[in-house]
Structure formats: C-alpha cells, structure tokens
Length: 423
Image 1 (cartoon, rainbow, N blue to C red):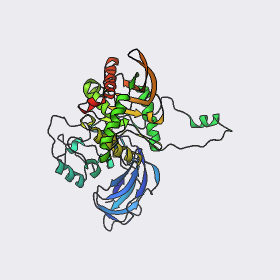
Image 2 (cartoon, rainbow, N blue to C red):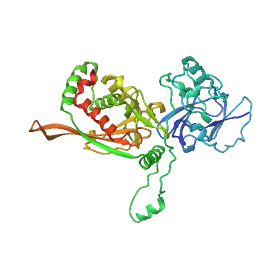
Image 3 (cartoon, helix red, strand yellow):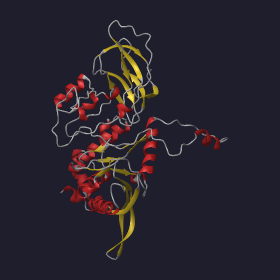
Image 4 (cartoon, rainbow, N blue to C red):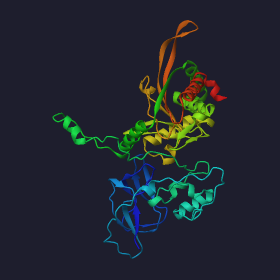
C-alpha cells in the first residue's frame, strides 16, 4: 500500500514552507532516518528525514515550490513492484495536530524510558530511529513535540536533547494571526497610482514577524522603564580583560557583558524571571536570555540557556556561534524558542534609545542604545562620562512597576560594577 510523505511542521509557528531541494529522486530506495529533502521554514532551512521505508514512487511537489501547506502530500513511497503512476495528491490534513505542543511531563517525576504508548493508552508516533535514540538517552517521548507528518517524532526531534534540555511546551501566538483590521492591498496600491514602486512579496519569515508583533502590541499591556548607565568602569574593565584573553583569541563585546548582567539580574530578582502562559505565570529557575540578531529579511532571537552560570568568555563564544548560524538560517527550533527575557541592541548602529516590542511569552525585553560621551554632574562637578540609555519594555500581566524597576536597577548595578559579575 502506498505511503504518503507529508509536508512536516518543523517549528511550532510553521504553517507552510518551501520545498527547497529533493535529496532523492523517483525510484530511489529509502530507509527510516534517511535524509530526503531540504525544507525552508519561516525561520531556517532544515533537513527532513524519512520516517518509513520504501521506494520513492512519485514526487508530488517539485523542488523550489513555495507556500506548501503543512500536511500536504509531497511524495509517495511504494513497495517493490507496486504501481502508483496514477497517484494523485490528497487534500492537506489540518495542521493543528502537527503544530500542537504537548504539555511537559511533571518536573518532579523521573524520566520514563521511550515507550510505544502513553500512560493513558494514547499511541506515541515516532520513527524507529527516534525511538532508539530516545531509549539510549532515557528520554520520555510523551514530553517531546514531533515535527514529522501528523506530529510524528523523528530523529531531529531527539538529537542533541537531554533530560535537562528536553523541549517544554510554551505558549506562542499563531503565525496565522491576522491584524484586527485587515488591509486591502488593492486600495493601498490605488493610493499610489501613477507613482513608480516595486511590489515585494512577503516571505514566510516576514509574515510571521508581522503576525507575531501585531498580536504582541495588541494583546500585551506594555509599559516602559528608562535608565541611563555610566559605562566608564565597564569600558576600562573590558579593555583590561580583553588584553588578558588575547592569547586565547577571545574578545568580549559590550553585548556579552549586557547578557551576563541581565542573566544575573534575573537571579537577583527571581519574581521577574517569568513568562505569561495564558491563565498562569511561569516563574523560571534558570536565566535563559534571548538576544535579537538581525538577518536579511528579518530577525532571530536565539536563546542562551543558563546564562547566569556561564563565564563571559563562554557566553561570547556561544553568542558568536548562534548569531552566525542564525544569519545562515541554520538554527534548530530549540535554539530560538523559549527564554523569559530578551535583549535588543541597536546601539552598535548609532541608535541612542528606542522602545522594543516584547516577544511573547517573555515577560520583558531590554532595548539598548549607544554609549555616548556626555557632561554629567558628579560630586557637584561637571565631568564627562560615557552614558548608555536603556529601556525595559515590560508585560504588566507578569511584572508590576515596582518589580520591573527593581529588575532594571539590578541590571544597571551589574553593568556599572562589572567586576562583581565575576564573583
């Protein structure tokens, strides 16, 4: 009997993608776990593996096809001698099942070995290779979100995952969320009739950014806290430590110190290390800090997990790696999902101050401006100092004004007294 290969949901926000490249051709024999295609999502280009074995009988969607809906039949596998020349694509199944995230297993329970069925009798769909990897690592398949057809767990979902880093369910707005008032493209174009312009179609990433940020501004009650930070001690300390790290070819940036300062501040003010989960607030234990990285056509927010426990040099190395792979669109979903707090730094582009939009379900985001030499009053004397403006955008459902002010004060204190971050 022919086996349909469906367009997978490779991230929680994916509803359609581009079939960038086929790695097999009709007539090829494939085994479970073999790489068969490269698929471009709204965030990255990812390899897609077979979850069944057979012969590629018919490719339904040519490579290079954009806008392929999740769960659309993209190819058909056949058994030896089976004729599927008349096969035609069936209607796409609803993407909800593939995109839904399962609730995480209770944190106090020990990890259960990979099993064929959940405790309630519901079958867990996973490829044989994914089951074997999960069994070797002692992972509970019930707590892992599958990215294969109809939510099936495949190799990519369990590779690189440990019990401490297993994916947890998060609340994230749907990429298909529409603005409150729809814009009629033809009416907008009519306004510019007679003027020369170029129409730029939206790719998957830009559609997702537009939907998520529209929803964020419409549904999250933002408020803003602003401070100026005196950077002179930090600049002198950075120069000194970079001289000592030169032999290791490590060079710390101001952003590395900001990441560390925010991570430690979230530990100092643990009530602010929280995310909004619809009908509850999740207070996080570790400081998982997301950092906005601009790429062509959009941005990523890769997450540095356990940033409070890592050295500045380790954070610097990890951030460079994540940023490089973000620009190449090579990040895996678990590397840009999660976190409770984000940083957006436009100071390196000369922006003095700005207000950032919270990336749900985060509780806050810090907008960082440029360090500028200014006259200030110190001990009744006018002196010059390098001052950096920051704005903390806060979700009022998660963090109240006084708590937000306490968090921002902890960030400022860390940056103005950087040697304390090494204690």
